[in-house]
Length: 281
Image (cartoon, rainbow, N blue to C red; front, side, top):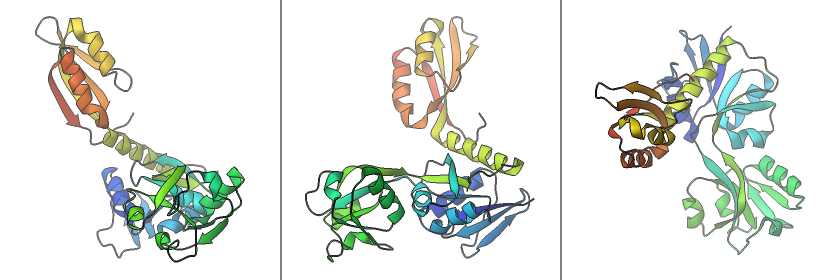
């Protein structure tokens, strides 16, 4: 049975979703006007849809699996669930206002403009706050200046757009979002879905980690391995030079420079870093 996969057709998630699937060994469309693309080698059909609609199609069972944003999944309340975080398209959902509001409790009685009414309604219900939600399709930053809202609730990546509009975020983040793989709630996974999840997991891990190799005197080996414990355990091999060992371990990419500094301090030499292009752990 051909596996049907929903992907964003445009926007910030589209290009990154295509890239991660290519890295996972799946063919992707070359023409952005194509709405359907078939990968016969892997027996998959890709459907390029509005990011906001993907969770609805997957939740209905029309498409078995898809990539969308966590914020979009929660907002639409579709019968779909998160399978895997894909570590791209990260953003934070925050409240912002032009006036000096410092706490969420001050939202009571306010008009809140948002393109994500589902997320805001859920948050207000959880906090037992009564406020009016003003639903807008986009450009919510202008709503306060135009007098239709007192506060906005929106996805914030860098905060630059808010600053241009004279707005400041307040309170704690409502939601941390990123691109996610989703499936229908209660769906029974077949071998194709398991393979897709395993491949994407391998790419996510490969992007997050690098391999570090180094030589170390045996007397300093334990200290070095504490710095590079690896996923399960580092690989250690004796060198021809007596009293020395070669070590290989996976290290988080974001930490690699501090790890290299620490290794050098405990006597490691010949420290080399290599990218990981795929993995299965």
